[in-house]
Length: 108
Image 1 (cartoon, rainbow, N blue to C red):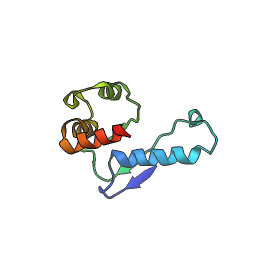
Image 2 (cartoon, rainbow, N blue to C red; image 1 turned 30 degrees about the vertical axis):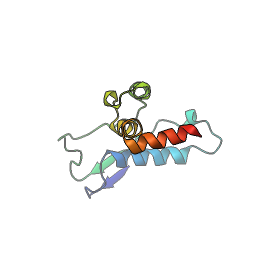
Image 3 (cartoon, helix red, strand yellow; image 1 turned 180 degrees about the vertical axis):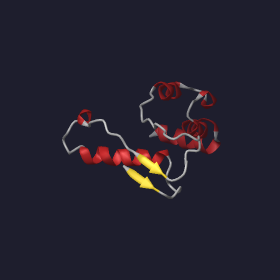
Image 4 (spheres, rainbow, N blue to C red; image 1 turned 90 degrees about the vertical axis):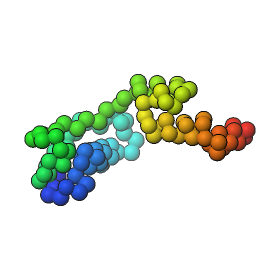
């Protein structure tokens, strides 16, 4: 549980950070990651930092593979779901410097 008065650094990523710290502390070297128990982070702030005017928010961490696998199989970056990946793909597929860099890498 964390209580914070400041709005600075009080968003969803702070809750994810706290949750990851719990996971890292619980899992000992050599243990299977499947052994990590479910945990819950309660994060109380003075103001509504998420801005949706709700009293509570449920922030989920989950694995979403479908969209990412789709992006890995795309030949056109404009068809990708994730802009960060599309931007890099555009660089290596369409930008003159990026294409040259990729060609050099592939020669090795």
